[in-house]
Image (cartoon, rainbow, N blue to C red; front, side, top):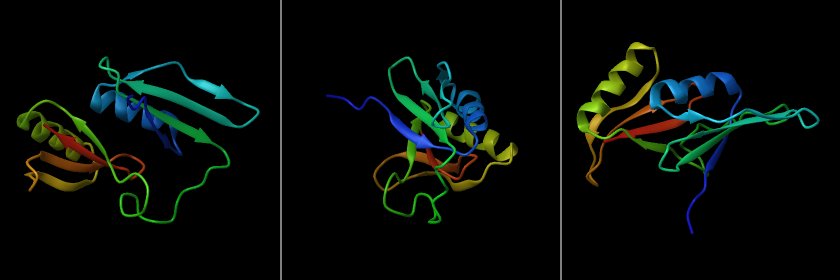
Length: 128
């Protein structure tokens, strides 16, 4: 068995697609739309097989609890390959105006990571 993908409800489907493809080099599949349900989605992926489905539906509403601090998905971790790449991407995102929730650091469990918020406030760990 394996996890096939994780899905994230989003408000701005196109903005989130641009964010993940631009900053995390994800490939984007064709847009799926079901106009009857007011639903649309994209699969974002890496060649190794990891996939995220970003989805929008007109009747899905924002959770009022802080993201990453309530039951459910806490964060998404994306490995960029090295300590230098963690530092570099964190600085690029800072210059672009994204929130740096946690500065680059070595964690107690041995990860080198920073934590940023994507355009809709989801916690993203950038790891080596």
